[in-house]
Amino acid sequence: MTGAAAAGLARGPLGASVAHPGPGAIVVTSSTPLWYLTRATGVVALVLLTIGMALGLLIAVRFEGRAWPRFITIGLHRNMSLLALAFTAAHVLTTITDNFVPIDLQDAFVPFISPYRPFWLGLGAIAFDLLIALTVTSLVRARLGHRSWRLVHWTAYLCWPVAVLHGLGTGTDTRTRWVLLVTIACVAAVACLLGWRLAQGWPAHLGVRVAGAIALVAALAAGGAWVVTGPLRPGWTGRLGLPAAGPSQLGRDTRGAAGHPGVFRPGHSRPAPAAASPAAPTRIPA
Amino acid sequence: MPDDARFAAAARDDGLRRVRRLTFQIGAAALACSAGIAVAFGHLSGASASNQTSSGSAGSDSTGSRTGPAGSSQPGSGSFQPPAQNVQPAAGPVQGVSGGS
Image (cartoon, rainbow over all chains, first blue to last red; front, side, top):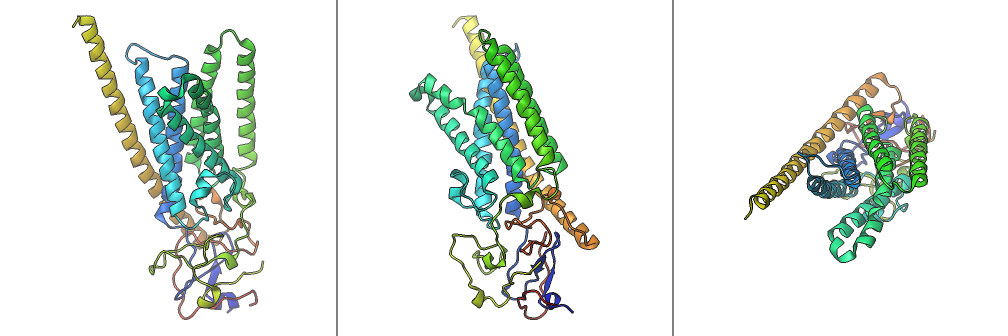
């Protein structure tokens, strides 16, 4: 029997060693409902954000029909944006509540400070901040003035693609086929409506419209190439600049005696020193 | 009130009702989808873990199972990996090891 086997260590799903928990041992697991809820609310929030974006573009092209007056589009755009914000808030809340990954409240608002996938999580923080700004300025639009509101509202064109990049780049579900299909459908819908917007808007500025169309096609091509060569390739999540969280950084979870699995978060007070946990695993050399 | 104004007010009320109804339906669908997708992710991860355990092969992150915060998807990186599901307790006290056989 090898030492690893004797110590209750086994091969994890990715070929690395994990500890079999004895009394008081550390357990690292992925089977928490909050983690699944985080990913689910993220997908739904993206869909709702896309619907809100699409309705906003329909308002911009002044779409209306006999059975679909324009104020219905405006009302739905407002409500869908609020729903998207609510689901994004749920996405953030479940992420910071689920204590497997070291993501704190400030990581959700301040970009690029998270130790966990800092760049791609930072994009999510930017999209969340922009979404809050868009919603708040829309709620106080009457006091803000149309010009200022419009200026802030233009950042919706930044918020949505940044949110899409966050979803794709974080990479947890990018290679899941139906999630990828949902993302492609969202991008296709917004791209079509943006094309319509460019075709209809600014009739006196042909140059702006042509430049916008070229930028749209270039962004789609670049984004497609990046997805194929990046997040869809195996091992993408291993190249995300994650912290070197070896077992020395792991600690007992603080969520009560039930021993809910978790990891030590850098920056948090370490709940159980190694000496107090005889079952704490040490680093397994490659 | 003139007929035109009455008709316009009725049309507006009807439109607002449609907005409320559609918002409620989409919100309810979004809630149901969130719950359904979360359950689906749970099943996917469980099934993936079972397959990987039985086959003994290295997995990928395409199933959505968590690969951990350690940035250690590459096998042999020497860092800690989370299992896809809870592992059974080992009999007897567990000791940490550092390599060796």
